[in-house]
Length: 622
Image (cartoon, rainbow, N blue to C red; front, side, top):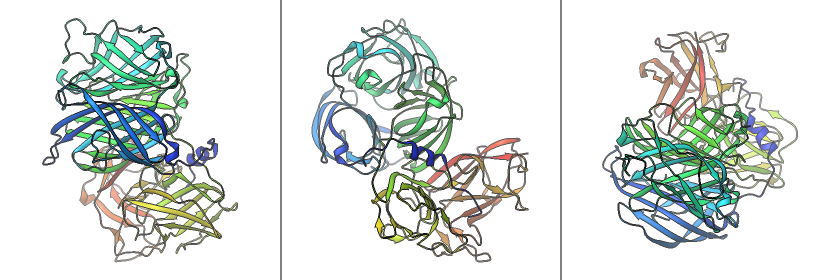
């Protein structure tokens, strides 16, 4: 394994959690408010041609045993709202992974995540024509206008009249006085029919009203010289308020009023720093890029590192395909808990309790992207005996958050408790299925085990594992752990880094086998070796845990591969090798040339396969 240390901040995170119970159907009970937006597209084209737009809002009542009822209203196209009712089923797996019947399209299943105080999801597995975002929050116990007090960051993504022609998003601050009024008179955002230009509009008076059951309204009267097509947010937005007023969700129920609005209560004291966003969250999102035209719906996870780095795991249904991505997105928070992403356009808003966050596509400059995300902190998991954390099965290269898949032949890191107290590491391949009395099975197949400690196991996914999911069990001596089900993909790239936390400098070597670093950077036109995992099947095949061939025929990957340096794709004829690292086990190697056009400095490095994408590391270039 080239001596790469697989320790990570995840070890600290898992150890620091206040443990709760493993998530089950019984974890989801009672009355939840929900808001959902769903777009259907023409399947005959990869360019997003929306054929129908739907929005829904109301209550979902979960009975704790896999069934729920729906009561609310829905919009379809430009028609007025009509009643929405019915029932459905749901299934909550350990870790908070779940599925449920789609409230707006019952023949479709939502892929969802259950976090603390919110349920988020999207129908990413429903095929190439369904794009949606779904959020549900527990109904509060008692509410009033006084529930909304203090400053909020409000974000919206709306599709007036349905379709994409008038898509718009906002991100602006409102300070509630606890009696139905806001102090501010300005809304900030952009709209496709307003040339995507970042715009400030005067809207006054903006007001709100909250009922005892937690339902309410925000009202945005038309500003001078504005109408429903030119004002960024207008009319009445129906909202649902969380306990204590820490956040709210909602959207318009006027005819053609499709969209989603969220509000996040900020740090009124101005005490927030980058360290305030710290933890792992489940999230759902929707995005539309105008250049080139692309619609996307997302469900996934976010690990905010408290240092200005957030690692994302995105299961994305795009108008041109389905894939998994693990991008690194850097951020900078101001004192009120809001801030800008520095590596991509957009805002982030973290609530005063750090239990939820929202993201908006609105940027300080004109942006061609429209998006909204909402995330909720993971519900901690615990168990007795040998316990495999359902949220702790991770790609050993990237350590992307829960939901990013493992893949055949890839190295995975497993976190848990009840593992042997002493640390053991295999000295050299072949790696066997038993190390220090520890075994790991994946869909019933034995996995080669590379290292074991009291809280962490590193093992290799058997090449023969197939299907959309993998079931893992750890055995210590004769004691078996709980079963954990995680996503499985043909490939799930993750680049090893130095230090081994999934971010920072890529683990790579010069031609003389010295390590690439800021003190020993790569040079333009140089051919380097990059080390990673998750590139999938090879030809010829290699036995699990056995060293890859050191001479021809070498074990080359069978799927597609692209390398991006500083956002520039490396020409295929300058990728000289992509396969298992010769004479090593469980490690992939890619040899490629550094483009001559690169600037000096720490330059981003990304890898894309047919099924996945990762861009969490950089490479120092002289």
